[in-house]
Image 1: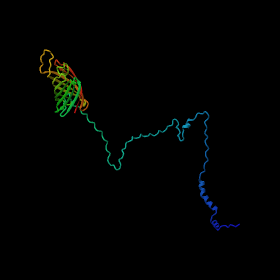
Image 2: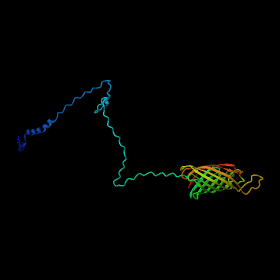
Image 3: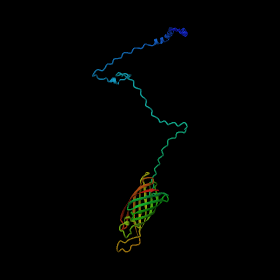
Image 4: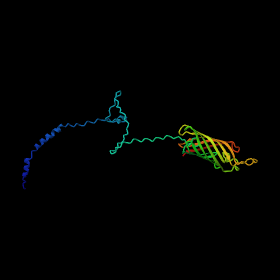
Length: 322
């Protein structure tokens, strides 16, 4: 066998490598003191024995409600310090949002509600003594017994009105009216007194010879009629207070178709005149600034033998200003 000779490089490494003892001594000096300084680890404490509940023993409710860290209860009679009072929370205030950086305009104040307009009193009267004033117009319509009526008043001056009217006995008699109203005394918004005059021409469905107690008997009108009179008004306080009126007139009729009812009476004259008295009392109840409804009642007192001695008159209607 060939003999393996040691390499000269191996001898060179052994010449320069220090002994192992020289390396272990410094390492023990460095690691030894920290290890000696550490406290020895204590052995785990022995577990406390827990007594198991005995058979048929009532369970301890306190063991289920207790929790670790709960402070011990104070003995009875001991003085305990009261808990500090928490101050009331101040009310929340609404903070306005800050405007954007580019918007430097001041905040606008809140808009105030529009003021409520004051109520305007109703002064539109068609049946009373108060006129509608210069340029004013009032119209009305009524339904009743014995006639239904339509009226209109046009103001010429502050105290003078022109009156237009139409009455009908439901078609049996139709009467067109024209007149005027003059407010003589004006007591302000409460009362007034005036003079009224109306003239009319009536058209009858049947002739005087053909009827005995028809339209002429019920209405008391004849072919031509003139009605002068006085009218007064009184209004209560308030913007929508009712307005009372009283209308009294003298009725003068002219009959151009007289008839002779007695066999030996001879020929009747060409025309016959007669007179009567009429009165109406009622109230206008305002509904708004220019509109009101009214009720009226009264009668006609007649002196003609062929007419009714007394005929009641009632009506209800509405009046409005234009």
